[in-house]
Image (cartoon, rainbow, N blue to C red; front, side, top):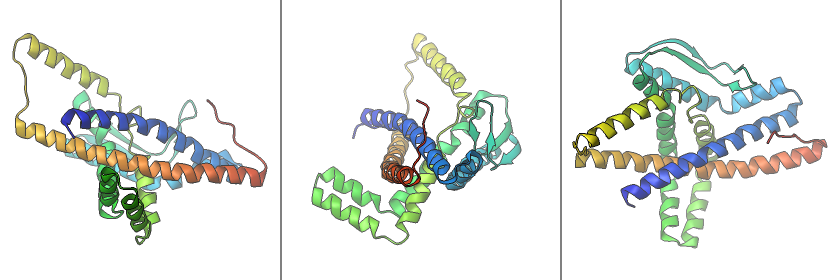
Length: 254
């Protein structure tokens, strides 16, 4: 796969993750409300489900801030309802003024979460074999690889961890605050360099390093999408059955 192809599919897969995450977050809270009939209890149910991912999300903020020499004044895993009814699963408050370090701290959960998903997917779930079978286009090989994965010890534990981590790794609105400033600076620097005739180019070794990193990110995003789709099917079926048994349903805002 060429560098441009990897970058294209990386962007597409990243954009797909947000609507999947929104659907899962909404439906898990809906199922919790059907089970309990209490919004407060449903919130705690949701918090417990995604606690492993929330912990890694906030820990990655904290570790990155300390590595960059940024002081942290708060580390919380306690759920909190913010203005507008938005649920905040946890928080790390940092004292940083420059947008570059702020943006690095903000993107840390995505990188740490992707690494965790990649390690679990390739190390514990044998998803490399499934990927190779998909590339070969052999349906029998694909089915055999899936069966071999599903009979692995503790497979549902590892699938759950991928599910919990991947749905908590996306940068929040506060995490993305400094991105616009950094992208603006980088864009202005690139325009200035081209305007001065500097013709900026990256060394080949650095290009290969970046391309390898993009390829690993693409693998992590692909694993995340596949696992999310599996859980979405179960969540959807469970919600329908639960609504039928209890004789009620949740109305979602469009």
